[in-house]
Image (tube, one colour):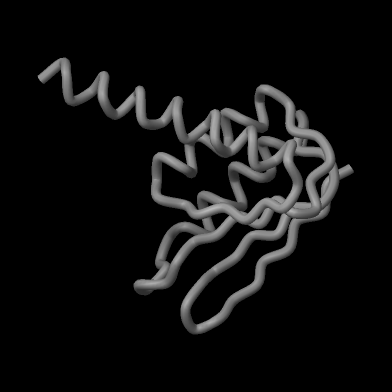
Length: 102
């Protein structure tokens, strides 16, 4: 099960995820986040993972896609922070590969 909430403020739009970030909910997260990242009007886009208990490989791919689009993340436990570090490394390697091929 996965609960998805959106919190709007003057400075940020935050998608709060609670539960398990696994299929089939990864498609729903992708869709909601894609809609939320549009028309930010100079606000930050934040994905809050503090309530996540499980992240599947598919979930990691969704997070990586939004990391590449400039999303910021909030995580509190060691598990989530480690996954975010690994995804940041993957994103950086992807950017270096793109720059090296030009």
